[in-house]
Length: 118
Image (cartoon, rainbow, N blue to C red):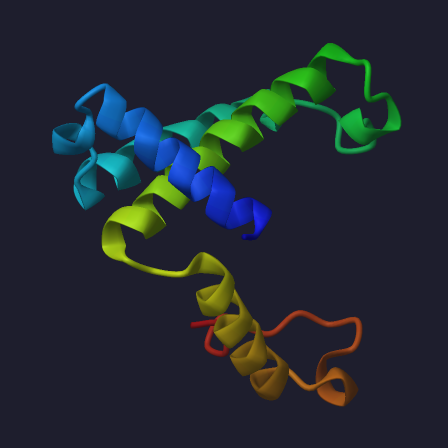
């Protein structure tokens, strides 16, 4: 069993033990996920882009980032579980598609324009 599968099962049990399944419909989970992404973004909203938390893993910013990233991951895992989606498989298929759409020889060092990113 992968770490992701174990975490999915642990979170599923956590939710079942508390009878929270009725609150974990896709819409509610998506809204919670968006909220957590917003909290993560807020940490960096007005920060100097030259200052990065990874340069000091003991910094409060780094620690708060880890907390918010874990919230995002947990809601994403729960959403995938509720929808019956294997996130690793879906991500690999998406990356396979992106590798075909954006070949290295055409996109090395340049971002695709908005019409290409869908």
